[in-house]
Length: 153
Image 1 (cartoon, rainbow, N blue to C red):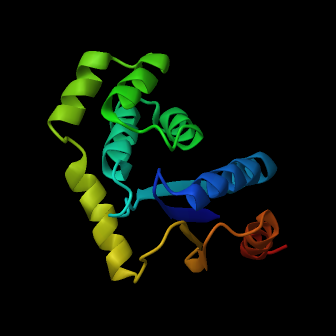
Image 2: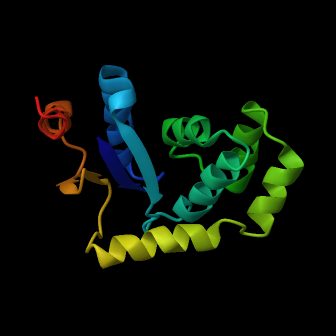
C-alpha cells in the first residue's frame, strides 16, 4: 500500500501525523511504502529551509533521520539549528552547507508544491492511500482502516 504524504516541517499537525506514520510502519512494515512530498506553507517562515535540509540529508542517505529531528524540533528550524542537526546525524557538513547555500533541492521542493497545487491540496498534512485522499492529522484508526481496505482485509 502506498502512502503519499504532503507535509510541512513547521506544522504542528504534521508533527502529530509523523508519529502516526511511525506507528503505521511499525504495524504494517513492508506492506506500506511512504512517499514524502514537501509542502512548505508560506506562513511558516522556516519551512522551506527545513525542507531543503531534509532533502540535503536525504542526498546523504539520512532523510528519515532528519525528518524525525525536524519534527521533534519544529520550533527551532533556523539555519544554525539545521546545521547542528546535520552534525548530530554525522552528515558531511561541508556538503550539507553547500547544498543549503546553493539551494540544491529548491526545484525539487517546488515540483512537490506544484503537484500539490494540481491536486488542489492547500493544507498539511494531506495523505493519499493508494490514491484515496485523507486530509489532516486524523486518528491512527482512520489510516489503519484505509490500509486494511487497500490490503483487502
